[in-house]
Length: 88
Image 1 (cartoon, rainbow, N blue to C red):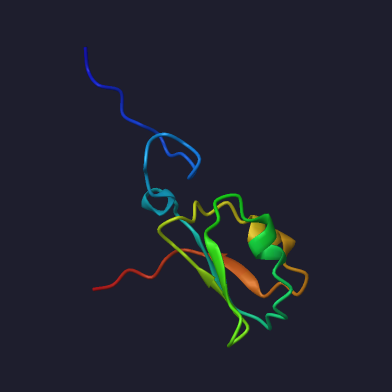
Image 2 (cartoon, one colour):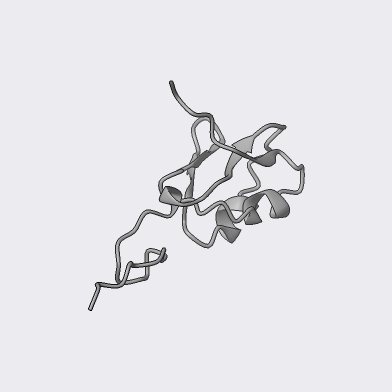
């Protein structure tokens, strides 16, 4: 019998798989972030952190599953979901 292929899980799961390994779109700051941190609060994977000194949100693309909740919850629409730029 073949071993089952594990699916993606959150940090609370039992199989350590990076969410970013299968997501097709990623959050990108494209507008004026007011540092309200709603994106950070609503992120189900904990893929957003904050740099309080520069008042910027930071995205951990290895943990981000590309769900778009952060972009949806952003009151200033500063976050857009986009395909990752492929490095050559």
